[in-house]
Image (cartoon, rainbow, N blue to C red; front, side, top):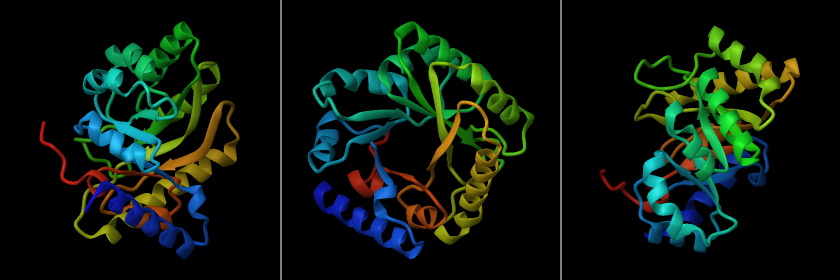
Amino acid sequence: MSITQNVDEIRGRIADAARRSGRSPEEITLMAVSKTFPPERIRDAYQVGLRVFGENRVQEFSGKAVSLADLEDAEWHMIGHLQTNKAAKAVELFAAIDSVDSLRLAERLNGSAEQTGKKLGVLIEINVGGEAAKSGLSPESPELEELLRAATKFDHLEFRGLMTIPPFTDDPQKTRPYFRKLRELRDRILARKLPNVGMKILSMGMSHDFEIAIEEGSTCVRIGTAIFGERIKS
């Protein structure tokens, strides 16, 4: 199937999942995860109306950014683990960092954004499954509390919500408790009305489980394979 057909099908499935949960499809952003795909494939996705794109590696996207610079209303998000020593380059390349997983990284991003006069959107990455191999803060960790309390001093960061990648399972229904856990965490944080901590965005759900994520409250689904086809191995 073409990218056009794929996107049409995904939008239909998003709409159906939203309606099942009493929500409007307009509440949900479709992010095209374009990591490893060449600029011409990204342009194809742009031509069918997609505007929000997710990349995993600073170096890889840096190599593509120049050839995509004319897509002025495209919004580029960093969704992979970001090392602190690449924070400055990430601020230069991306409109948002959706994978903030430490206070130290937030400090680096804020400093780099201040130097460039930029207001950077960020999401806090939560490791809902407690997997050692994955990035993200534990929902109950002192580190998360420390980051939330420190947010007030980061004038150049806009905390917008939470992101997660649950443990992989062949049965999408088994991801539901993890998505629910993130939504409940969001609700608890929101109720505290912390300074400079917005919680409008719940970024959860990928190609194999995005409908379950929407039913559990996702406002942004990150879709790669279902849009572009099988990923090119790097």
